[in-house]
Length: 88
Image (cartoon, rainbow, N blue to C red):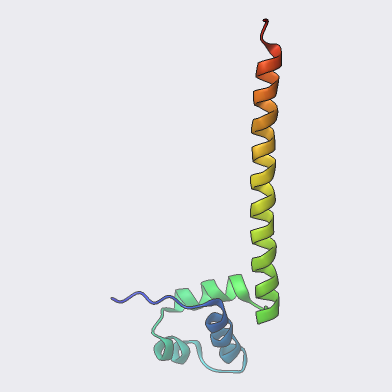
């Protein structure tokens, strides 16, 4: 079976069709996915707009960058403590 990669915008569009009253079975047949995929998407992206999704992605990338900075600082602090604790 061919695995398709849907963008978040496409996923939100499919969910909006479902909210508009289309049957889940018809949507799954139309887009070539399983019922489980639809319900997983619904659990993850329910009620989101494209703007909300873009904001979420930018916040996640900023959070990832900040965690990396904190990790690097912790490593630097640990190295400095080890150097200062040695007797010369």
